[in-house]
Amino acid sequence: MNYASFIIKIIKKPKQSFFEKEISLTEISGKLYQIRNKKKIEIPVSLSLWGNLAYDTMQYYHINDYVIVEGYVSLRDKISSGYQIPVDKHIEVSGFKIYPFLLDSIQLTKMDK
Image (cartoon, rainbow, N blue to C red; front, side, top):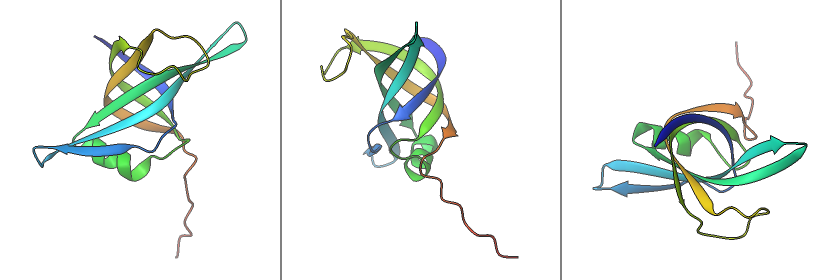
């Protein structure tokens, strides 16, 4: 496995599940965009987050948000064929850190003095 950083667009609502009633897991479906020779390629990515990071992700990140993710990368066999380009592998990232990049869901609140 390799440790890497990515900018990922969240395309589906994050799903949270629990193991042994205490350990939280949040799974996010997203797209990784690669631009090469003036062509934009969309690569499907599955992101898994554990523990407190999973709770924070459910609370702060939503569909169409862009996030910077650091984590370990693994390749799996392709599970669906609904994407624009033929990709024979599916990227899965086990995230250790997540940062906001471009949040579509930011709501500004009025500060009272």
